[in-house]
Length: 284
Image (cartoon, rainbow, N blue to C red; front, side, top):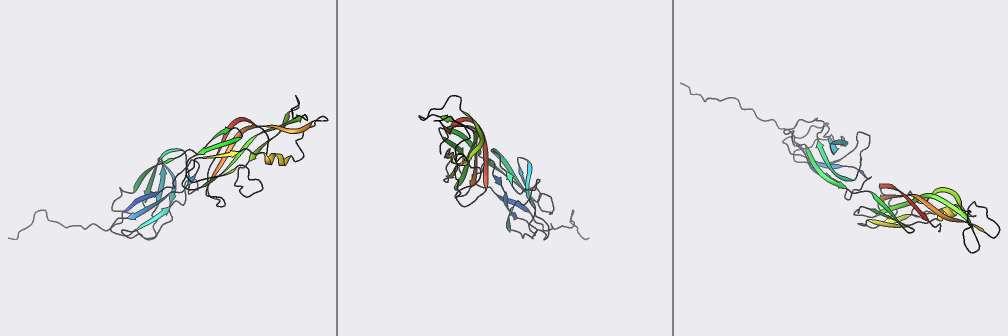
């Protein structure tokens, strides 16, 4: 009698398949609110077969559970054990960057987010990372100086500070005394700078921030205002009296910050306007 083995049957071999995982997420150091952040990840194929050529190895980037950007440009075959670094190239709003907001956030990087590739393990496609974004810029006025405070970053940065308000002028006597009732409103305008202006004719309000510094002090200069009224303010005075600017009633302060050094023209990371109610003496 021929013997038999109970339960014997055909043995099925497991077909080789790729297995994509996210090994690391790249975040810019010293991120501050308002900065445009482009996420990037490194992925690896830890499976036993290459990914199919021509098929997208997509990445989805989620911040606090919301999809913000993605990467869908990589279609090369990724062999077992190989790695590739991919950056975001698009997003729901058409931008490949996320506008940073202050606070602590959770970033989830999801490889093969659209399930285009059949993998040996479909449960290891995400990597979560927690990161913190510092507040953008805070202002305070000390005398004739605006003090802007912000988060430290590893490299240098450039700031431009402007003060918007109402200019007043009046008539003064030969002794420099303001004639009662002569003061009147002249113009609403801004002094300083809202744009990168190093090396220009008017560089008022510009400042260089050293690496790691958290503050810049900007003297409020009225050179631009006085230049615009080279022949004096539009005030008619009596004989023996002189028209002059009397005060500048500031209503808001704005500081814009760029990463990089003078001449670099780096990315803008924040621009914050703060309401104030401060009177300045109008002097160059």
